[in-house]
Structures are given as C-alpha cells and as structure tokens.
Image 1: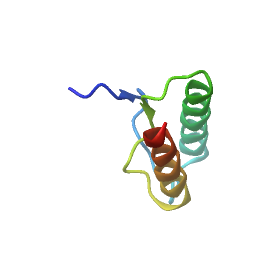
Image 2: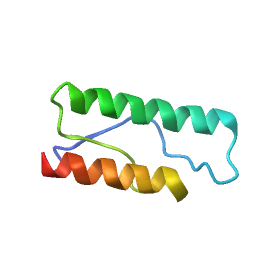
Image 3: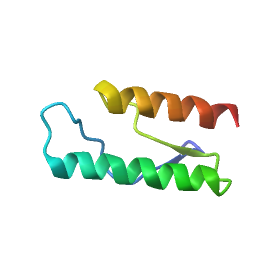
Length: 67
C-alpha cells in the first residue's frame, strides 16, 4: 500500500454532476489545500476527476509531489 494519503471521499465529476457533487469536490480540494498548508505533503486529490476539476487536481498533485 502506498504511503501517500488519499482523501476518503469518492471522486465525482462536475460534467453533468449535481451541485452536491460540486460541493463535495470543493470540500475535498479545501481539505487537501489545508493539509498541504499544514505540512502534510502526502495528501493527493483523485486522479480520475475530469474537466477543470481534473486539471486542478493534477496541478495540486504535481505541486505536492515536488514538496
């Protein structure tokens, strides 16, 4: 098993998703940003998000990988 911390929420897509899906992704992003801010560089966002959320998750994960 990887030593990388994965967020517990299941990934969802904003493409055609409900507003609750959007809120869930935003909550995951905020939690991941706070973890990174607090020094937890093992946190990652889901790699299977699509569209703009996927681009944000990829960029976040790239930043976390370089820390």
